[in-house]
Amino acid sequence: MEWVVAEVGDGVVEVRVVPDRAALVRVAWRVPCVGATAFWAADGGEHRGLPPFWRRPRTAALERNAPVGCLVGAGDVALCAYAVGEVVRPVRTRTGVVEETGEFGFWVEHEAEPGTGLVLRLDVGRRHFARALAGMAEWWGESHGPVREVPEVARMPAYSTWYAMQQHVDAGGVERQAGPAAGLGCAAIIVDDGWHSDDRGRGYGFVGDWEPSPTAFPDISAHVAKVRAEGLAYLLWYALPFAGRHTALWDRVQGYTLAYKDHMNAAVVDPRYPFVRDLLAARLARAVGEWGMDGLKIDFIDQFAVEDPPEPGPEADCATVNEGVRRLLAQLPQDCLVELRQPYVSPGLWPYATMVRASDCPLSPAHNRQRTVDLRLIAGPLAVHADMLMWHPGESPQRVAAQLINVLFAVPQISVDLTAQTPAQEEALRFWLAFFREHAAVLQRGDFLPARPDLAYPQVTARAEGTVITARYAPLPVEVPATGTLWLANGDASAAVLLRVAGPGTARATVRDCRGRVEGDEIVTLAPGLVEVTVPEGGLLRLERREEPGD
Image (cartoon, rainbow, N blue to C red; front, side, top):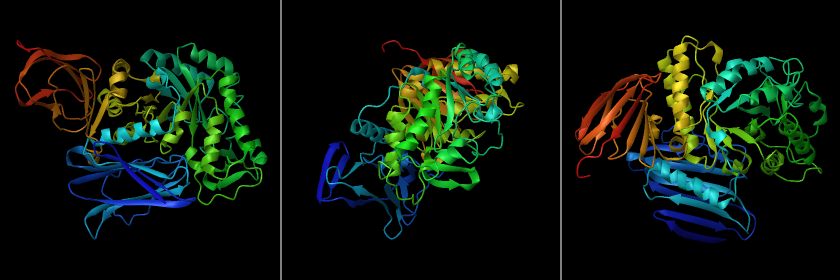
């Protein structure tokens, strides 16, 4: 077995362990657990505490999770960030506090081949944890070759039918939302479950044939053309792994399944067989090739990750489910939009997708914020989408705006009946969607610096070329840049906003409410220290620093 440890940057090392023959390789290390505040992991959910080292190991593979993590310290520094180069086959990791020593322990392991081995990247340079994780994503991108180009439409607001219509979706209902969605600034419409069947039982017993319901979508090509004429791209939902018990596909795939999901009333098909991959790929290709769709929403890839899959039969052309999934995705249409979803976030999926969405969290702004920020940290080239936004018809425009602010650094998907919004709700929606569109370059591709993962990111900032955009979700002071423009979105109920000023000067301060109406516009004097300004809930402050004489 050969070990190579190389320093590749300031505080960044690459470890490569190459066995003499195929073998399970494990690399273990520890760091002093001093000043640690959180442990960040791609599948950490809402938990950001320090786990014990005896906790059950986690597994990352193409279908679920990603082999990356970061021990975060006070001041949001990365005490130790790591990533593993293997992004298709299973990688097991164990991380946590070693009770006997007060250290934080790590190990990673996977089956390794003599030609490639196990490759591990470590960052102990104490840079901001977001920059450390961005470095890991950049390394993955360099290591695994070209990815699909992400078109601009993938970074623009979208409309989704899921929360607004559930499975009660039909052509007329979608068309009624298309015009208002385009008028409010959406660039795409995503039609979710329900288009393929008249069943409304919330199960998956009728998925797999993927023929449009003749009652709900009698002429799907004409329907798609009508929606696209509004200026919207059209994406269609597919639950890729499932063959429902009440479909014709069910009989065809017997003998080619990984498991049966009783609670879903469907089987998970086995992608190790070319027969299965060809069947599924042909059905999904029709959406783009025959019906005129612009993209696919591919759901439930994580369901391929079954425990103890059966041994592959003689017709299988690959030994592992991971490789079967990869080959299946490679057969799907390549010239269209493709949405994936947490928890399938492996960089091994980047060549097959254009966007990745936060997992379902209806009417939970804090979860949506945390999940979208988590995705942004390791999504690489993909556009990150929020889970769909919904609200009660009686919701205030301030809270509608606050929901949008909670996903400010991702792409919002709106899922309410747009024809039933109050004038105030519609104004808030129009104002903030315009802000998303106008500032997409900074919000989605600027230097991204979320704060305090241990507190679910109570403040998030992005900056680029003299523009700083900060979203405030708790009453924490907001740093004012020395030059340029600060945009401050207030997603908290408190209107008394504290600005932390480093150097004296003056600035023009414009405050708008949640609907975009100007509440104040004046020149303010900024003295070093804390300065209080009033920004209403769901509102926006624009603070433009003025050049002083002699600057």
